[in-house]
Image 1 (tube, helix red, strand yellow):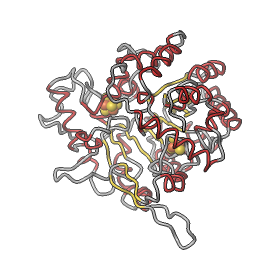
Image 2 (cartoon, helix red, strand yellow):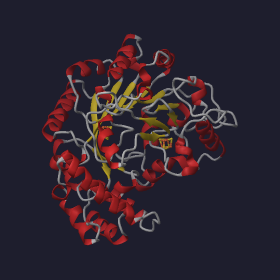
Image 3 (cartoon, helix red, strand yellow):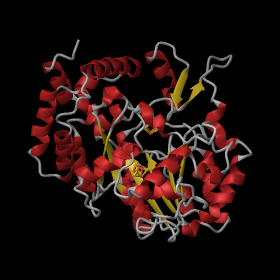
Length: 437
Ligand code: SF4
Ligand code: SF4
């Protein structure tokens, strides 16, 4: 299946390495974490490889090659979009359409390679000779939250809890391993590879790409807390490119201010999704560090920008991950979004395994099907379909549910929370299925 991410996109991980796509499946060994490799099999990095070489990584070429030889086939990297298109009945106008369809509409590339004409535009091996129109970028792992389903790869606030939970590990990996060390004051030192954007090789590469860019997707870490994010916007404004570019964000919306909104006004469009997961005390438990009252105020501020800019700046959705902690809370969150007139978007969390709902026993999953099939909300239908289509899934492994309970108890101790009180329906379900100690 043709996708603009594969044909026109470049995705930079928090440590500067390159992958095919931010949502591609990477948990199966044979997919090599969808990491981009060069002709010698080396991992590609934004600092060490040229832009055009990166556009022709082994993964990009193999998917393009498949797209040309069998245009209707899905690459095994793309299960996420494949499943999304199944659960939305291949409806291209669906509010929760796949990222492939969303980007196909959002990125206004010329006709270099489109869904209709891409066959023959790349070599037989899948190589192309153009610059990316779409940049998917993570400026390291600086964040001001430590959400329960996150990790040190994406949030530096996770270091202490992760170090304790893993029994003293100092190396984490999201592809190439990153090693943590402490300084003489017993504080973690920011790993240099996670600050790749401060390297003098970065900005000249960005300037090389800028005239061709039509779309930039920024997420984190938390994009709004990284100074390099503001530098990037200023360079695009000063270079006269901003008006050609759609900015897309996934943000926790903790840092929203008029200075930023002033910068956004120069861009073609600013499409903001805000991570919410759940409401009130459930929000504060899941999105540790976030304060519900502040969150609500910042959403109001964003809506004000939306109104003043006539939707050139827009809050397109508040998002949730369907995971163990939200297994019973989706309908309430959806209702709240409806009450403030913002679309509610759902994603199905794949990892870490202990947060994955599909590891619940079959009977527990049937209970969830019962709950959600009794509602006629849009999200309930998607969840029902997701659970039904995975009814026969063989991946269910109760050990991950035991790990979830242990993990949440561990976080309660570290963070002074009480997950069983905040998520009573989940606690009740896990008690009935004998997962509680
Ligand atoms: S089809 Fe989906 S998963 Fe595959 S590269 Fe495109 S956006 Fe990523
Ligand atoms: S806001 Fe995003 S990056 Fe930060 S901890 Fe939460 S999920 Fe991770």
